[in-house]
Amino acid sequence: MKSAELDSVLIIGCGWVGTKLATTLISQNINVFGTTRSAEKASSLRSLGIEPIIFDLEKEDAIQTDLPKVDAIVISISPGRGDQRSQYPKHIQKLSKLLASTNQQVVMYSSTSAYKEKMRIVTESDALPDPENENVILAAESELKTIIPDSVILRLGGLFGSDRHPVKYLAGRDGISSGDAPVNLVHREDVIAATISVLSHKTQNEIFNVCSDHHPTKKELYTNLSEKLGLETPSFNSGGSDEKLVDGSRIKKELGFEYKQNDLFSYTPDKSFFS
Image (cartoon, rainbow, N blue to C red; front, side, top):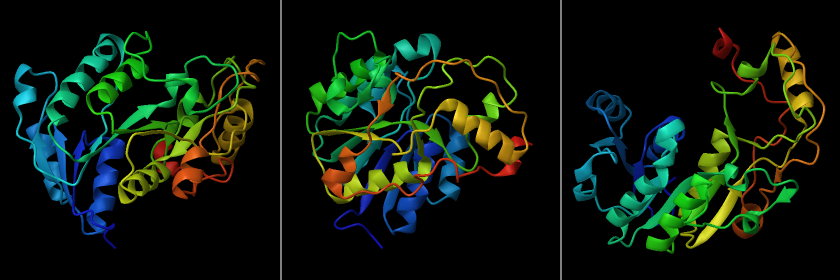
């Protein structure tokens, strides 16, 4: 069923989350446009029912791109790694200037790494967008908020799903640090449901954490899942019990949202993911 008064959405960045969001919206009879940097990916998007747009923020003329008029825009761009990561705030600034003249609802996926090394339960007010911050996540959020104050930022926990899970890369490893640290994960389906909730409520000028309520320790979770999946059990060093625990409850209180994948022990990814 189509969300109230939501007929069209533009997704900037059709990666692992963005593409799934697009197909979910299409199943609700919403017209979806999606950007990609390659013609090859454009063909793939079109086959899913997404109207593709070739768009590359790294190009000088990107800000001149004629984007379609839609009801809402979701920015789903990865910060990248290494030198590329340092350019993330500039890319968000460029994109924000392009979108500034529109009156559409704008939602951006960010990350709970905004809280960096804080040592306690963290809520949205514990890290505010800051253009001078060395944390590129907070600097990029600030670029968006400065240019589009009514935008909504969703700070996502570590992502997992049927074909993506950290246990794949931890199984069999020795001496993993901070085994007593709480995990801060969120299922892709909950990210999509949270996004649709924000779009449906026409929410403006907010920052929400999107993170499961369940926070077992790294040792507990990845030992449990490794055994369940028949993988080699990892070993952990002690410590980390005072590391950050991301509180994702505010979006529940404000929008009536509920996490569906809220028992990290009971969820196991597809075994084909490990072959």
